[in-house]
Length: 65
Image 1: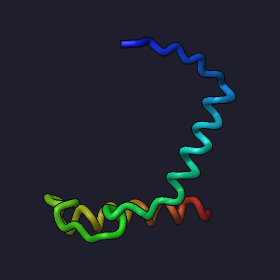
Image 2: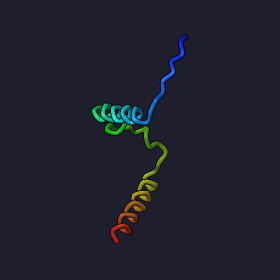
Image 3: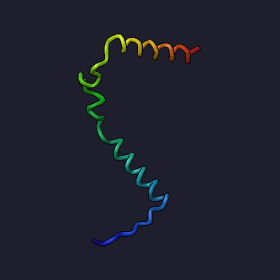
Image 4: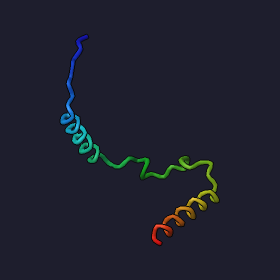
């Protein structure tokens, strides 16, 4: 097999990253973000969810003050 030596410059790396982000942004949103998956939060009780929501609410109220 042939060995190809590529010297990647910072400019080339930034251009490739820019192109990658442009291509990724044109992709549709992942189904995992939009579809309901009842197995995603298995094992969590309703009480744990309520406690988490209260904690988030307290953070928001503290940030407003």
